[in-house]
Amino acid sequence: ARYLKENNLPGTVRYYGCPGEEGGSGKTFMVRAGAFDDVDAALTWHPAPFNGVRSTNNLAVLEYYYRFRGVAAHAANSAHLGRSALDAVELMNVGVNFLREHMPPDCRVHYAITDTGGRAANVVQAKAEVLYLIRAPDMTQALELAGRVEKVARGAAMMTETAVEILFDTASTNLLPNITLETAMHENMVALGPIAFDEADIAFARKIQDTFTQEAIRSSIRLYQIKGDVFSNAKVDGSTPLHTGLRDFDGQSHFRAGSTDVGDVSWVTPTAQCWAPAWAIGTNPHTWQVVAQGKSPAAHKAMAHAAKTLATTGLALMSSSDLLAAATAEWREKTSGKGYICPIPDDVMPASVHSR
Image 1 (tube, one colour):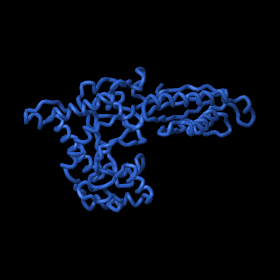
Image 2 (cartoon, one colour):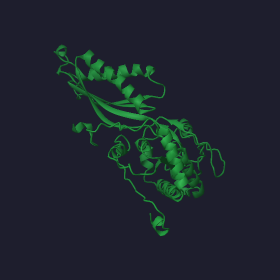
Image 3 (cartoon, helix red, strand yellow):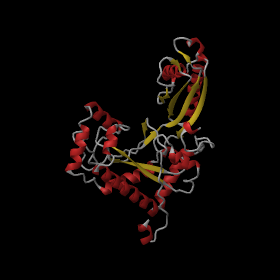
Image 4 (spheres, helix red, strand yellow):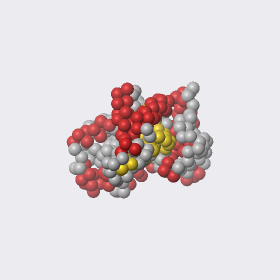
């Protein structure tokens, strides 16, 4: 922003603090509220085991709680009088597991039992609850799959003579990559050069990497498609615990099974994301190793590098009307005839479903 003012360049830099990216769908709520309606382009980043831009088609996701209510009873003396909500949860899980064979290939379903009904084994549990995440390549498919999961839940309730309440939690739409913006972002990362990690950074990353199996390291390289180094053309094989180079950008979008609320932003404005090597190669997201590296000097260097990437890419957009026009044209082509419908109902606020 200071550079724009000093050089008399038009434009506004707006920084969004985005809460609840994992499971909270913070940006989805922000999009619904119109926070990005007047934004010409959005740029973001995410920590990773690699440095660079990777164009991805992240999955849409819907989250629901399935809350079962039954009848409590003594499990030995009068179990015939009880109706087990926990049985209903277990039967639902079994049913969904059989459903997996008949889902579209790129769909994913995950669950966690959030309430077993209590710790007493000699009681027929009168309440139980399970949380489901339902993912698909786009929101239409996700909603269709959620409808099939709902049928399984209602079938489980029917089998156990219990009642089921389905509570919407959160949702995020699939990501629309913008190759035009991503190419510009990659070019700026090339111009910035490698991150200056020191021996202490490498040594700490090595300690983290020592907690991984070789399979995990190879999987990390495959998952993030760390195919080489722009600066030295060296093959990345995990022998160096931190990605000290820059992943090449092939200009192609790749399937990624995860989900992100960045997806909702990408439907209302051209959006690009870079990745910065805050984690040792082999680090799997959502693990204690991610937490252990979160405040390390290497992570701070990666974050600063990402900030420079966002700043230089933003400057490129404000300095070149052609770049912004091309990014906007690509975005309009990808959204043509589709439009964005927020997957979060109007009456759902950003609060825990357990407050309802």
